[in-house]
Length: 211
Length: 211
DNA sequence: CAAATTTTTGACCGATTGGACAAACGTTAG
DNA sequence: CTAACGTTTGTCCAATCGGTCAAAAATTTG
Figure (cartoon, rainbow over the protein chains, first blue to last red):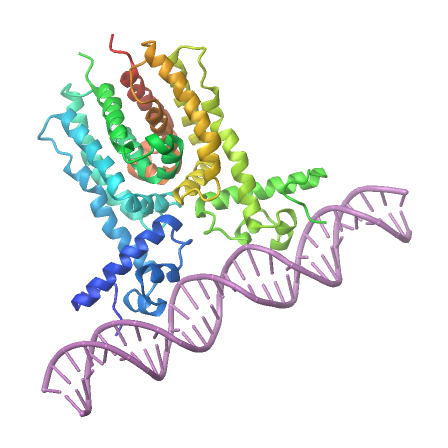
């Protein structure tokens, strides 16, 4: 019997094998893109034969789809946590920090997402215009409230969110370039701490109310 | 006779055909990546048969290589123009503006470059660690001079350049997402002016010396 | 005009691709 | 042990890939 994509998992072994495949596929897809990756590559990375892999995921697209669905949840978690309860500047600062930590700890997820968007988001466009837009609009309203209350400088909340995404994800998506430019000394493990310090200064001083 | 990559162009027709192919290849490569693009796609986009295209460029890689070489020159031009002569804040502001204009006017070039970096820059790594690093180091020294002179706030020049790259190129590379989130109203042609206003505020207020 | 050269194309090739399938293998329940 | 079920693999297939080649067509040259 083959394992359907939406069918409930049966044995513990199936769960584990599917997880193994997804892990391998994340590695391969994130570095080669969807069309640039082959089932053979994924199967080899997962340590199994191609037909065996196709026993757990019937089509190449199914693997990618499962990967993207899981990705979006964890990827948007930091933004969901952005809340109205704390101090606005502190909230924003910790959002930036969390996003940067995700770029550091989950660079493959970031690159997988970037690959999809770069190519026109053919597989997740509905999610962008639906779930994502709703979430961003909601958070933009929160930020606008902070601006009206004089807690942070008045500016465009949507482009503020874009700039946080751009600057943090840059350290995952363009990691090769960052390391090449920084060189062997400054391009080491400390580059994320340097980035965190810089981004905090850039955003906070730029957002501090004038009064 | 076939046309070599490094051979000097002969007739005007050859120049034009090569240009036609490069234009078509830019379109295809920038949306599908190198491995995701086929010679047939490029040939069709250029309005010619596959063997005809291969008469002008012997290998698929030759097209990509020519494209990347041209790209880097124009792509780094704004940074090269960053000079020590004018007012530092004005210099940085116009650099940001020029980069954003390039993201608006040459989004395909930006995506082509992003695709290459995302996949580990296998074809231009030497350029990154060589020419690019040299240029950035040089400009970082200029910026550091501005900081020592108290003209702009003290921070990390390299990460400052990264953040300018990230925020501006975001509007080319993630254009689909930007438009989806902004929606039909705010996602129209005015989005680049909104972005310009926001980025100016973000960077200038963040870089202004405290005194 | 005709000869020489450049440009274009149809047909083809070997390699790789995503995927199908039946047989073999392993495991577990009776 | 054995029947049933879940798992794995070798083999195969049609489609597509990058690229070749010889010959036709168009253009340039004399």
